[in-house]
Length: 81
Image 1 (tube, rainbow, N blue to C red):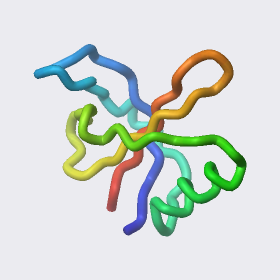
Image 2 (tube, one colour; image 1 turned 135 degrees about the vertical axis):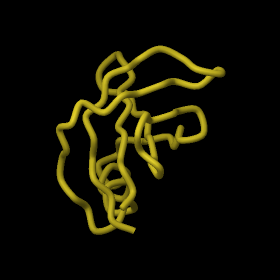
Image 3 (tube, rainbow, N blue to C red; image 1 turned 90 degrees about the vertical axis):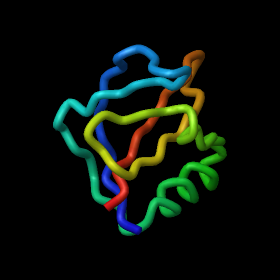
């Protein structure tokens, strides 16, 4: 399943889930979501799937991953196409 990385901004929480709104800027298109995850794991950067705790406005299928970069957490959102 191809996936496109999205840049999003946080819009708070809805029903206990994080709400993200896409800014319209799309990143690279990946042939499969697992390619990104595998690259992160090979680089010894563990990622955690948090798709069940995230809502993305206007997108029907998405996946979200959380990783630690430096001292803060970074959430990466992908649109599944």
